[in-house]
Length: 254
Length: 254
Ligand SMILES: Nc1ncnc2c1ncn2[C@@H]1O[C@H](COP(=O)(O)OP(=O)(O)OP(=O)(O)O)[C@@H](O)[C@H]1O
Ligand SMILES: [Mg+2]
Image (cartoon, rainbow over all chains, first blue to last red; front, top):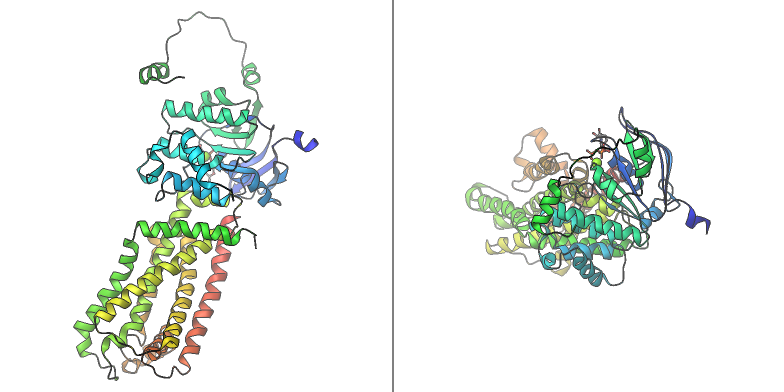
């Protein structure tokens, strides 16, 4: 029972350098089970590096990281069974069809009915019609949706999403957000990185900011807001944002 | 070895074979150069070349052409591996609970299949051009065995640039010297007309013994020590290239 209560992701003093470039200089954070954790940071802050270490693609120079209770360095195989990675750049097979991509991943995860798994996900990500087409004919958004669908196969307890909505149109972004929320509701732990502050606001239970190799703040949205001087009450007319306009014109249900 | 090694390798082999059937041009491109060389050698230079044997020149030069076919075919092996490394799909596979070396073995087996198909195509053209052999089943099997071993040896060489190259050109440039090597051997002209140092090189490099062994098998002549020297070369190259490739791979995935 205690393992159930232990955090899904636990990072202690994680360091990583590329040659003399010290990217991570002692990163600490924890992610509670079933929660959504957003890692914010500017370009080159080291978000992707941290995600790669957690998904056993890179070895940290120092520090420890545990995912689902398993150490990324010494129990890499167990970690891989516990996670799924959606990298910063869509990792799909261009020459295969969308459905074949899903079936491929389902087979590699040793699931019993790869075809059914694929069809269900195609439906869920509105890709049924495009499912038989080569991925090289997909738009950026379709590719990303397929990429995320591939990561959901096998229901791993933790999912890493590295900038999942970069390059998506507002509607596709909302679809991805919806999928992420559903994941967390069903008990999956989600670690996502993003450069969009509103994405973190929308989704995350906790937000951490990675800056110059360290986590400089880590808290809930409310806690983060409290770091600033108290808000003054000002009366301003509520103008619709461009996003509101766009979404009402294209008829999305936000 | 992971309990999923065979299953995962089969799934990934199916994937890359599908790549090939969807772009059969790689097989055709592989076969075209050796076929063009064969046409040129037989119809342009062939009349002027004295091989010292009374069988046709196609019979004489086919073994060398077969080796050139493999040498140009493995450039695609490196290319396919390189594309996987670039595209992010490699990282997806590595972050999944898949047998670790399956990705590599799938590429190696695909290389073997693709090269064997190219070899058959070249062989058929040679038949049209008048290649004849009275070799029995055992001799043909021996030829096939030598070619398989040669392909595997060169494939493992190709894995190294495929994993470590930074550009697409870099990934396939290594094959040029390999394609050139048969010209400095007994493949097209007898070595005894070559000047001193070149002749020493030609007579002691692997291609000469492999060519001589295949030629003798086709001509139903005793293979002598050539076959053993040929097999030793292939096995030696295979072992060394495999060790280097695996070392490169391990550095990549950790
Ligand atoms: N393989 C590598 N070799 C050398 N330097 C690297 C390598 N990978 C990343 N870096 C450097 O490490 C730093 C952090 O990179 P990382 O990709 O983790 O940043 P990021 O926060 O994901 O940025 P972005 O928002 O642009 O995706 C950058 O300065 C980058 O140039
Ligand atoms: Mg990044």
